[in-house]
Amino acid sequence: MDDVSHQVSARETGEQAIIAKLSGVTRDYPAARGAKPLHALGPIDLELKQGEFFSVVGPSGCGKSTLLDILTGLSPPTAGTATFEGKRIHGVPDGVGVVFQEDATFPWLDVEANLSFGLKQLQLSARERQDRVEQALRIMGLVGFRSAFPAQLSGGMRQRVCIARTLVTQPRLIVLDEPFGSLDQQTRLLMGDELLRIWRETGATVFFITHSIDEAVMLSDRVGVMSARPGTFIDMLETGWAQKRDSRNVADPHFGKLTGQIWGKLRGEALRQMQLQNDVAL
Image 1 (cartoon, rainbow, N blue to C red):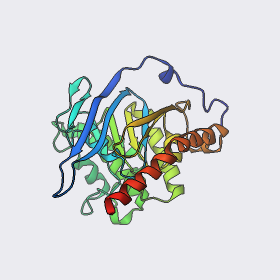
Image 2 (cartoon, rainbow, N blue to C red):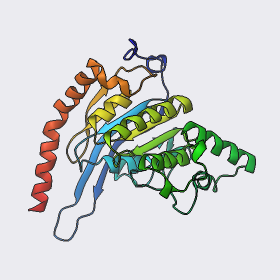
Image 3 (cartoon, rainbow, N blue to C red):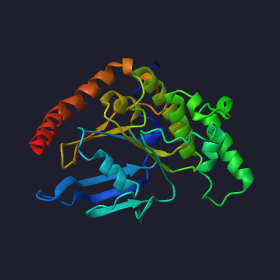
Image 4 (tube, helix red, strand yellow):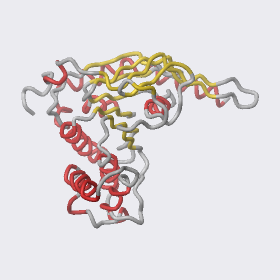
């Protein structure tokens, strides 16, 4: 690993514009019969900087996916405001691409057709559609698999197709919800390298949700640590990695220091969330 692995890049030291902002955001869910309303999230304040890689970790059930839903316009906040590029979020904004954990490939379409499907609603010429597909195939290392069907691909390759299908829309904010959760550890590390390469090549902002502290630290410029429900941010950690980084940074002593720092914040919250879930079960 080179000796500048955790020197801050020029992009991180420069003044970065704010691409998305959450202000006083909360989310409550209506009560089931005989129960109290569920206060799931917030208040949350967050500013995402243009071009940064931001990850969220927190206990299961703390509201990470609810936060994603609000940021992407899939669900409105109960209170507070959510904006993307200065505009209030109503529905999925133009310029935001979402990748979920589940395999979302279309099994009846080959890889190239899967990617083209994401462009059908855009007003593009046939040439531009093909150019975007070719670029995404190249970025994701799928050129040699363009005629393969999802059933012929490994889980990691299918997730590449899902990410590529998002990339063809040229999002300025890429939101990922546990995209590597179903993969083995070695594949997750390699997919993380691929995601970092995409991030550098596209210049997009990345908002990444994961249960893995190691994954968050390896990938991110900043890591937001969430509390037990109702989820709020209890820490924001700057990793200090250089922009040009990859999975080799897990061998750096700085990596162990960062993961230990996050777990020191998170352990008590994870225990508290488990108790909350036990209380609900009772």
